[in-house]
Length: 437
Image 1 (cartoon, rainbow, N blue to C red):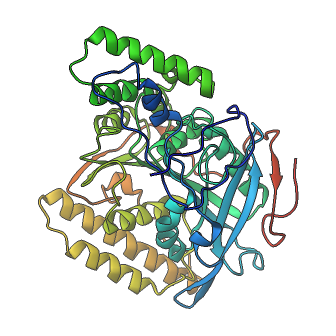
Image 2 (cartoon, helix red, strand yellow):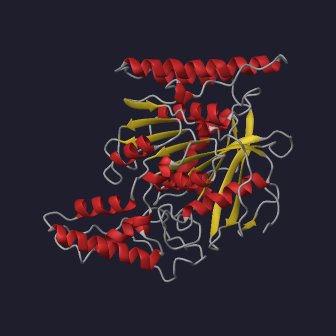
Image 3 (spheres, rainbow, N blue to C red):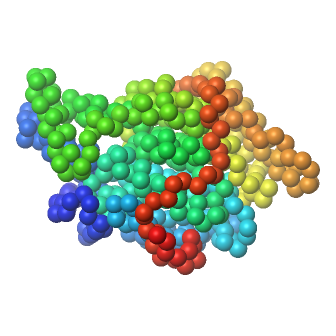
């Protein structure tokens, strides 16, 4: 298989990569189990320069499409981050988005370290029917965006900041949620510490310490090697990453950050994940200060997530982002039936799972009743109970739920973030207009 092009520019380069003749992911060379020093560059690249995902815009499908009776559009545009790298973005929304005065919530999907915005298409399919817009993008150093290296969240949090500021500048967004996987989950946590107005987060496979991940990768790649040599290899990797990507892997210790965030969150992890092992999200979950759920799913780090996981996340964002369901995109009973069918096909191994299913269906009924009451011009029912307080957010073979009593978790406001020196370049004049500085 072809490997990614050898870097010729520094990490500050703002040139977008040239795709190979055959788009797709390339495989990194496997490090030898006998000679660490000869392959520490390969281990280093597993962290900051994994196989880059090349694709074309045509791979994202049509720019206009229908779900049920409603038409949706995709707007592709480019933002410039604080380091001068172009970020390729796509915003999915209803076709009449700009014609009406209604504000809508938005979920920003943040991909993993070898992913791209294509990874967020499943989220688009899940959330659009619930009147939630979705923005997917390529982080700097990934996909079609500029930049040579990824930093596992160290610089990527500034990419999210540029996107959030852009969305808020349109004055068409009510609330914002973050959905991240692996690097994207860590980046979401790092950004959430700076912006408590984020309404909710889904954190799939985050690591608690990048240095610990590096250590585990070395141990799995080289065996029967003295600890002294492994320690030396880690120092070489740390030094190489500092030189190439300009950040220290020891500074990406996420546990203290987790303790400082109070936004409602769902943690998820694959039980067979050998890249970022499940104990990482478990430690973050234990330290997390906001309302929280944790799900263990079958599969590894890059395994596809089951359908019921997407349905559960959808309910979580309905409860935290508060989309307008007075005029649902699809018949609400159809959505409810689909979710009932999803859960009816699962085997209930515990009473807790049954309670979670009942709580999710109760939440759906409350939203349906609220929609009917609003249409009849009567006072709306109280907002649905926070799913983290009734264990209603998610269902899976293994679920842990904890509710924080900290009063600082009331962060569902839409305050404007601090402005940055970034530049916004729009390619489609029908969307979030013009050029800003």
